[in-house]
Image (cartoon, rainbow, N blue to C red):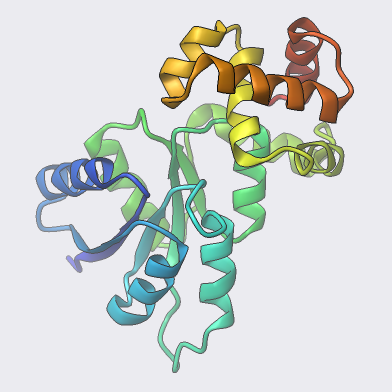
Length: 221
């Protein structure tokens, strides 16, 4: 059985180490982590240097995000080598992240709640050319292509927000208190309040209740 060579791309070193350990245990003999990267530039260089079969790719990265990695890898000459396949591995299960990443070129999208054995299976299936999604996320993709999610409208609204504002928006819309958001994102309550004011202004909403309804209608929760 051919070993699937994997590049792990995530901006948290401890998470990368955990993924490497999980794959070494659950994927012994079938999956091998050949390199790690913590941002877009490192990821593009690692793909060129190590020629992995599969890139496990976080959605939100310093330097432009997972979609930027895929764009830059696709733009580079491969010298006849088979390009890697991309599998998103993210804490985010928001519709716009899933759909945007698939449109950017990923073959699958799974969340970080996945077990080691499930991740090994997902990596192997993506390497074989299958499309792999966590069960709930597959519905987002089907709905998007069926036209039941207005993706263009979602993207236009979200483009007004910074990445941090999106994180605050999603947590507040899910019902988190300001102090819980601050703890989750390692920022101050005052910073949360500032981001929240900016989100409401940019989206032309007046309260967190309107924000929750806005996010729910767009399947961003």
